[in-house]
Image (tube, rainbow, N blue to C red; front, top):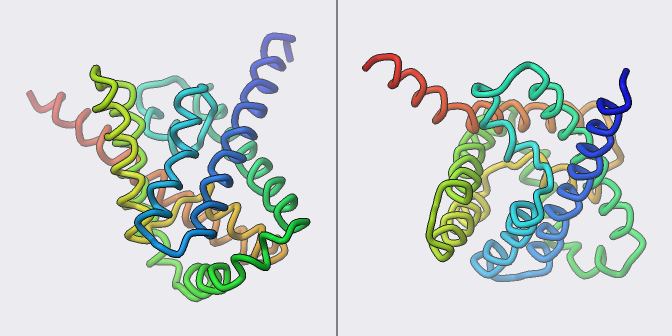
Length: 214
């Protein structure tokens, strides 16, 4: 494996680790906030920082699988691993602080929702989230007006948070606080990841189909 390839892998892991940390930061402030709308608004700090600084988020990259080559698929999978490591690292740090006592009630609700739900529900809720993330990221790339750019990032993220849609990286952080890593934890994360992937791909896939039907 060449030095350039190793550097690319290392860069992807570092950028995705940082993205996992940023989504976790949004998760912290969400758990600390009693008002769901304020919490949803503050949660958007995670994706805004990721987009502004060019970090790698799995749900931000997956929507572009159809327009890239096979090495992009590997990079996207590697991003998932880096996001997982970043989220669990943040979870480990949070567990060392008084924060877990401060938002224990919120964590109890999260555990009931995410581990009490069935897998089909998780899949569909994650699908909806994937659509929201795709529009947020793609709007940031495409919108020309700065105000429109940021509003079109903030609003879709607030929608998915308020509606309780499932986001695999946010769940990585929440799960790190709720339970030790286990087969059930992994299976639920993978279910949410599949849903996010399908949601992130549905719009570009249909757009590609539409272009071929002209």
